[in-house]
Length: 392
RNA sequence: GGAGCGGUAGUUCAGCUGGUUAGAACGCUGCCCUGUCAAGGCAGAGGUCGCGGGUUCGAGUCCCGUCCGCUCCG
Image: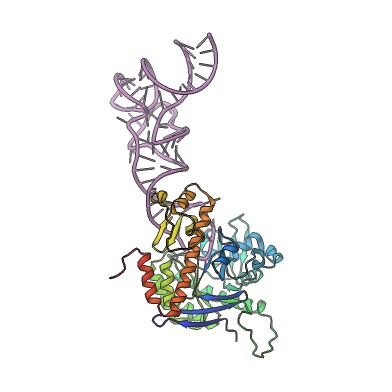
């Protein structure tokens, strides 16, 4: 049996845990935040930056990389790792999110999804099998099942349909994965399995929008299929935060304790603390890079729109508590100026800072779980982040 | 000295033959962004239409005068 995930430490007060995911490209310490590199690049950053931050896992996107540069190029390059020179682990999203985000450009059937390329309008077809095949060609370490992500809001009927087809596709993804990704490996230990880190991992994705019963059914059916990790999909699409938290909390009851739980597309610093507390191990989010490009910084004292007028003459560091390449050297006024002047470096510095901020936040979270101070640290962080006075 | 063109938001300009609360872009102020179609999106502030008369029910728009700028001719 392949134990790709091990739990190292548990929080005495909450469901939070510290763990390790063994991938073909190194160990990933959890809870982890993975920056999103849709097109084989974390926007404005280079591998050197990610390495310097100690990042162990990044995302790539099947749909985007399939369209450009194309699977042929990826294969000739020897896979995405080699292509972009990334030595760490890569998780590829299956393109399921694009089923949602490219709503106008696709048509769903039982067999799969017909997409029109957002680049040149050409027609393409993704089946669960094809999504897996492409992810294998990319050389992904953690593959995601091809799912249908319904929008918010959506009716219970729509949510049910999306959830049911996602489950059926999960079976097909798993079959395709087992056929192509797991050639019988000689095993001198005689246990008929691999050692940790020798196998690629295919995660299942739960759906069900914000309907608890659908969520339950989705989760239980996927658990039945026995994936090495489970993702919570279709959340943080605009639904009330309380609903998101409720869906996470409920899902934790149905998911096996000994597998990594991945909350897709989240999040904000508050979301990360709250979700880890409930037992989430993995995150990814475009927020640090997208907001970075748009001039919003995460800081220890809350969000900061660096383009705002008051920063014109503020020569203090963006976040005094931060030691990233931005904060260690440049002032708010300078970054403000770079944004106003449309200098590309502004987006890079802000993205770098935001990614560093979340990565360091996760490190702090892991350490506090291990030290048994999670609850205290969370409270302290949120007090400062929300700019409230510490309780006396 | 003469002729022509032009003066409308901070800036560059739209406003057909006169007709509701004068528009755009950029700039400015702020908010937003959650498995990236995103160097993006939304909202807001800002103008006694150079000035003074006149015609008209009604003038940024037509007429007269005047000031300023540009171009050309002397």
